[in-house]
Length: 102
Image 1 (tube, rainbow, N blue to C red):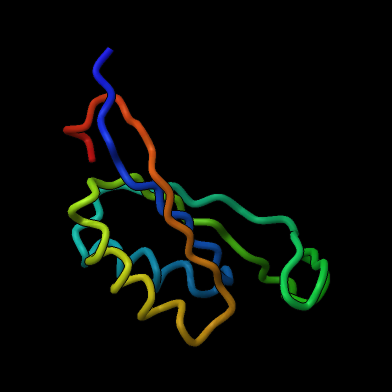
Image 2 (spheres, rainbow, N blue to C red):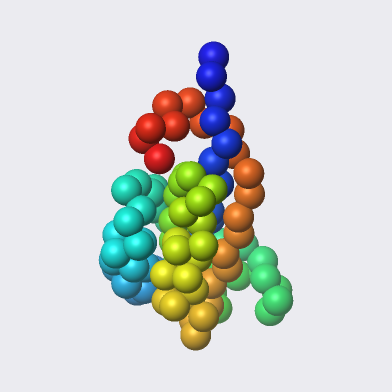
């Protein structure tokens, strides 16, 4: 089977900013992403849960798979939303089938 190199971008951000982030991704030409609720975790301030430090709104993770040449535009758009708020952006290499979808 033909595997193709892609970039996997994971963005954890406060739930109230989800719409701003997905709008920014759409404007950057990202054609697909998945939004997943985040129940808890641990960071610089220690462990947290949805009922704890972050507040009742909680956090979400937005996951994108894109072609490597589109990474910079996605990151610029995402960082414009994330930079002043609680959030984490990570990038890793991925292999995907059906590269034409990304």
